[in-house]
Amino acid sequence: MRNLLGSVVLLHLMGGCLSQFPRPCANSEGLRTKECCPVWEGDGSPCGALSGRGFCTEVLVSDEPNGPQYPHAGIDDRERWPLAFFNRTCRCAGNYGGFNCGECRFGYWGANCAQYRESVRRNIMTMSTVEQQKFISYLNLAKNTIHPDYVISTATRSEMGENGENPMFSDINTYDLFVWIHYYVSRDTFLGGPGNVWRDIDFAHESAAFLPWHRVFLLHWENEIRKITGDFNFTIPYWDWRNAESCEVCTDALMGGRNSLNPNLISPASVFSSWKVICTQPEEYNNREALCNATGEGPLLRNPGSHDSNRVPRLPTAADVDFAVGLPEYETGNMDRFANMSFRNVLEGFASPETGQAVPGQSTMHNSLHVFMNGSMSSVQGSANDPVFLLHHAFIDSIFERWLRTHQPPRSSYPRANAPIGHNDGYYMVPFLPLYRNGDYFLSNKALGYEYAYLLDPGQRFVQEFLTPYLQQAQEIWQWLLGAGILGALIASIIAALLVVGRRRWKRNQRKKRASSYGERQPLLQSSSEEGSSSYQTTL
Image (cartoon, rainbow, N blue to C red; front, side):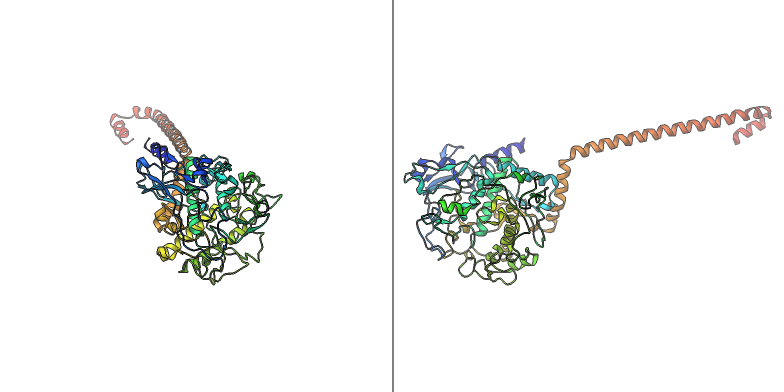
């Protein structure tokens, strides 16, 4: 009962945790007032103010200068996020979080968000078959569940009218919400006119925010799965692809094998063969000057290993990862895809993991896995359609964690100014609501309530990667084990009973034989003298 109560409390506290647009704010009133301070049902006040959870306040954005990569201003809704939509939002106190301060920040839970909780992300290849199947079923559930708390925008802010008289928002399922978020943060800027766009812009790639942004992205995705399944022990597994020569997770038992009739499709034996992708046609959106509206655009595509080998000659090795982790500088130079000896740029895959120098025209490390998959995962805006994306980025995040633990950099190591737009320390991550600053997530995952199994000390790692799977598998099949034990005991009892009966029968037969022999000798004893008879019987 205590566990059930705890689960109910945790579910309540996780009642809404990410972008794109909270339903209570996605309307004409919210757009007109530019205020997104929803009521917390716990006390009926905006931001849970009556309970001291938070308060509605003005959004203050950073005025630090951006780099030269984006020369425009005032034409993209993502500039100075989130001011194009809202200039007042909830600011939560203490360990409270969420768009209405009705939940806890990462790593904390409980009625007052005072309990720290650390979860462990594990290697998908060491998980039990039952755990792997459960993960896949969770993915499919998310793909088929409309998100209850968030909607997406299907038009730019200017298209919705000066006073928000034409709000244009749409429902979306939980999995595709994250696909859309990844599209929106990396899409091109519309400059006016069909196909007239600025391409050298990305608020989550090609600069410093790449790692903190994807860290927050995964944390939110993890929490959403916990919310819709009620499994609060769920964590995103990772795929350790070091020294891999093929897509080890591309099997029907995991993320889907190759279709024998069309190698670009997923095997019909996998549930992912029925998935429809969204946001995979950026050129069409640019020509129409329209946002992706999350309409299905065809099947999930993947053909690992049939990529351009000149661009990706091999997959990353353990030595490549070690080289990257050894680089002391997080960012260098212009802090973009041309940076040399930058840990972020090497790990992201725009620089060589052997020399640290930028290598235009080639894809290494993180980028190489995307290109290697040769399908939906290979274009930035639509890459999150492929669930392999999650396994891949969880491992990328673990390498980021290794670097943080190795160098223990101060906050000042993260660029405060002059990074490409969207990547400075004080910039709010696009398009998340509640708001998160890039620099606030330039810290160890220990502070965020999670860990990676292979980064644990040897004893803890043995428990997580070897002992735990066996114990969990035993727990999952305990009924069968109990039945087998009872059956074994029953069979043993029957065998023992048969042995006892057999032995008794054998003894009885032996006595009969002896009695028969005694009967034949008795007349001889009786015919002898008494002394002799007594002496013989004693001897006998």
